[in-house]
Length: 85
Image (cartoon, rainbow, N blue to C red; front, side, top):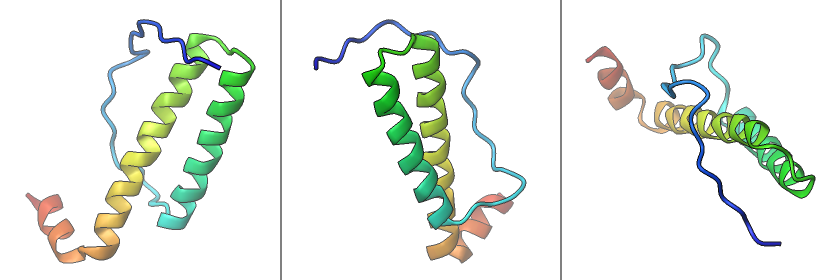
């Protein structure tokens, strides 16, 4: 099935902030898997552009949070210094 693209405008400006409750790397990996599966389902059912865009933003946010969770896990000293700056 070919992928069709359409011009998208953001629903709102995308600027992610850290969640108040930090999720674990494992929880974020599971979330990304679920969001990816949801996207495949949306595409298969020819969902509208708004639903796809919301899903895309959710995936991007989860990836952003996962990046920060991995930094915090494997480079805690550097992450703390960056947060303080």
